[in-house]
Image (cartoon, rainbow, N blue to C red; front, side, top):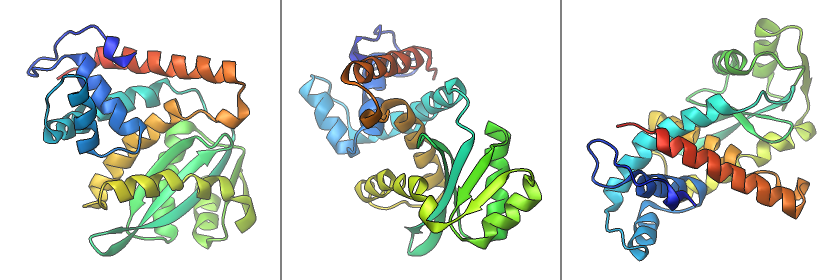
Length: 236
């Protein structure tokens, strides 16, 4: 249990790591608002405002997400890239996303354009972090072809609308969080929020339909153990 984390204090904060870690986990793991998490803590005898929880999520959620990212194994060598429109202050932005064949998100990037320049900005971030894949699958947006030919010419690029459903399906969780959050306020806020959200999803959303009940329980227990370990390491 996350609340079983040793109750050592974080310097400058009056609540122990166990409470902070639980609040960040509940907000990132489930489709909850900050006020929902406030109510969950109140039921457990912890009186804290949703604004304080917002500060915890912004600061410590980013730290934990960075640790999750560093601890992830190398992804599969077949990647799926896609982009979806999101509205920020009545203006269209594009959320670029890459997932591997196991549907784990590799990278996201919020941009105001959907052209070759935007594709060539997104792909280097992906290659720098995870190396070069064997296959890249995209829809028929020509910008992907331009970026792939210039930045990784040896990769097998498959451009077909029907092949890219893995990446398109991964946008569902983003839509749900976007609705609960009351829309994103800026591209920077959306980038920070979704970066942490995606790393948490990789850890706590194993593909249950591919696992037996026993394997799923072990995976879930391991995920909680990893989160607890990272909570112990958080610093002010």
